[in-house]
Length: 130
Image 1 (cartoon, helix red, strand yellow):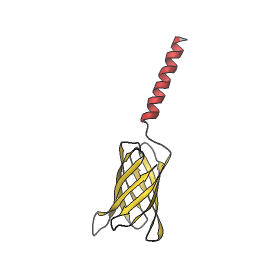
Image 2 (cartoon, one colour):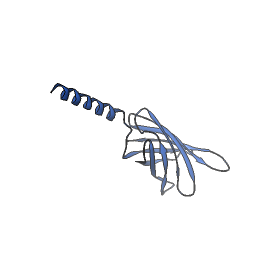
Image 3 (spheres, one colour):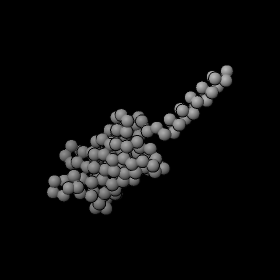
Image 4 (cartoon, helix red, strand yellow):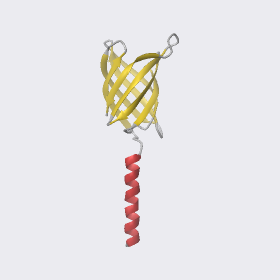
């Protein structure tokens, strides 16, 4: 009985520590705003789908200049509080890099457009929450 209790206690502790420190897997949705470098501020939704350990497929949906836009790409990071995330995205014509940090469920960061004539172009910032 004592061995069973000790084994069960250790199992519970290991599972608790694993859950507390694990990367977030599955789907993570963040919603907030972007602030374009020209002063345009708008709605931004980002959906991160797990693609393995610390790797994500990401989809950004937003409205800019009266038109709906979608960028898709990849990201690296755990999406846990106190961590950083970075990645790339494209709309099929233009390419972007982004990076941010996550605190209290809020991802704050910046994005840059990769242009041949101005590489990279500082295009703005974003703040999105779970």
